[in-house]
Length: 199
Length: 397
Image (tube, rainbow over all chains, first blue to last red; front, side, top):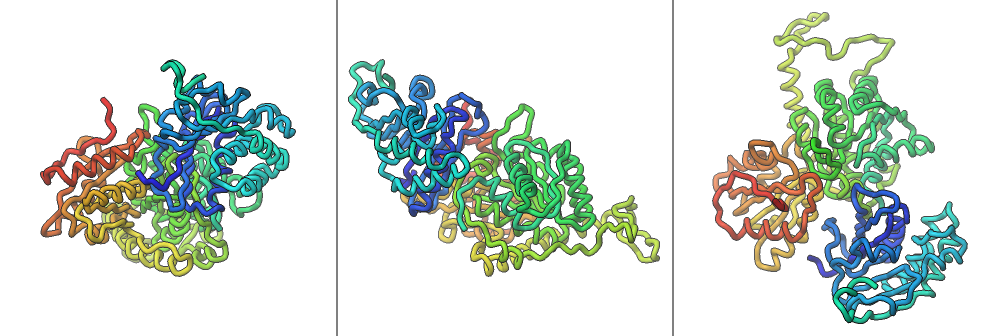
């Protein structure tokens, strides 16, 4: 209803750290002058491995509407396999941004005119020295590069703070590698209806 | 200092700052992270308190009753069926005039099992003799928890601080943590008028006869009915006291100013929505959207439900053409409990606004902003017929 609110939906799997990633971005947004920050996890049905999502709304003004996001400006996808099962692009605004952790190229996807940013966050995070499968710090780098919403140095600091007892520098390095390794494209409209929203 | 955290963490931080001395709680979703946080605080030495794990909610409140009877500042928290399981002790704590503070992370009541939000749990305990406060966001939660200890101890009445399960308990948003030294200056240590003391044995809350009678000292002692009346009278006085507490809090922390009803754009409003909890904030954007269309809408969030702030509410509502009461609870076979209260408060007003009732969000049914917009618009533009049957928002079958 309000036009000043940027709506970001984070898709991951239970245990993958999507909530922590959204929380890091929420904190960074707040210290960057966004007075309105509301982050609402999926309620009640979190199970390890199951698709989950988290709503993050940010605005320069205080946010009063805590209802779930209906039409996100940005969706962040921590696992490209979720594209086939979790309806990650549902409601995405026309021309909206998809930030995707995938080993594939941007050209392999068709999202009907949406902006797409891809990075192989899984591989880059491993390269940064994190255990295989840890992607929630790295995805923030891709998000930062693609959205331009927040200063990357603020995010590095927030990542180090969040992971202060769990390899803070390697987590920040994962974000840096992903930031540099993100490629952006505006996807083509799919040639057949069957291809819309998938590969 | 501002932090971004959940409503449960806001509540736990408030309890820590209030220096509760005894915490006894049994975990139940969506309250669980609150008690986990408190046990962390106690275990790490950040909070000087006894954390007493118990096997049920009934025991949790029993422990608090015992602790408060000895003069300790006691806290518990629960949700839903947990609150109902302690119901006997809920009534007891009020009758025994023990200033316990309890957070209720509001959740639907089973059967059928449902872990999501509505307010049927705390509303069903409306007449137990507890003060009930309702929070609209995390800042409210932490501020009200601190104020609740003050109010409870001043009035010798237990206080529930209610906040919407998940919507507030698990949602992250920024809030300011009050400075510890300032909280200490606001809230003095608990000093009860009387307390159980093995050095001076006494009986508390023994059988009290229907009629008055002389006690062992030869003084005429109140009967059950006098005791009950004094609870009622003190509940009414708690309204005045809350106003004073709010002023004092405002002077120290710069927050407050609406202890009874938080009114948004109600001064010139032709129509005013009334509700409890986070919904009153959710409705602010809807109010703004309706005003763009020329409908003079406002919204009032009731901050304290028992004692009912009837005079403050009437002052806000009396000039409106219509009042729309939206509730996440229902008095089965009648109407929304808040709806009945609002109508009763408005009865002495000569030219009363019409009052509509909507039930919504039961068991976590998503409250869509567009549905709120449509319902309010419908109430503002449709006939002014006084429909006493509640209408439902978001029903699908």
